[in-house]
Image (cartoon, helix red, strand yellow):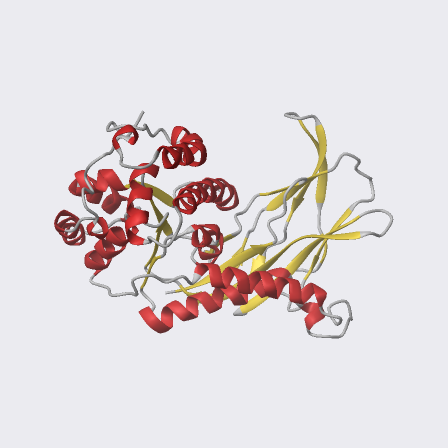
Length: 382
């Protein structure tokens, strides 16, 4: 099924409020091929009567020229604002882009954001499983493979690499000596063009290895969590399953799996994963303008109530009854990563850690444990 994918970049903050998400699929309301993007609101402390907004497009998917706007007062904060309406997109070409520019009365110009549009195949479903290592990501990833009867790599680690490629490419674009030279191709590229090509590379890699219908990616760790925003630009309707585990059990499991890493290092990695997830959850929800893109799974509840977990996730993912049965059967017979006592909740005071280790854990993980509603004893939750 072909759709037009839209990517907006950069994610402007501060005085700009956009009325459409950073990524999505175009679905024209009629057969004319026209699509309304809506508009944006721009607020500054000092507004000038001759402020202007322009759309610049080199391959003409949208009418270039000055944008209509009206000056209003926002009753909430009593600030004057420009409400600007973008012209309609005419969906004819397979690839195009445009840039929105603010010009002040003195002639100074600022790029507010750029948009790229590309025709691409829309997968039936895209699911990403992530979380701190040793938090049940392997069990969840394998269970979903069973549900879909779809074999993928144990871990992908694609998101972080592609985010680095995107960052490097964006910097290379603006630092190029030819970037400001009119008449060059690079002069006509914008930030969204670069990001769209990165996004299409991601989709191409997935299609090369897994086909067009299903994207299923399990990758734990902070770097992957930090790059989820790019995966959601590649797949705006993707679902993210975030696996979490209490710090005590997570550090115990980490020490067994990765004995060469220091105790303090494991504590810091657990804390960092949670902090990155909280930041990603907030920023992505604002950028996508909804919160139905993620579901948090607690490892202990998966271990103790696999059928209930399957029902909840299965309904959220719209799995068939047969798919839910296969998923549930796997979770019932497999412990997450075969960790010993995976259904048990421990007590910090009863652990055979040294007094120094317990002190380190409380210092590094204690505040985040409290923020997440975790206890330090067998009750697991506060």
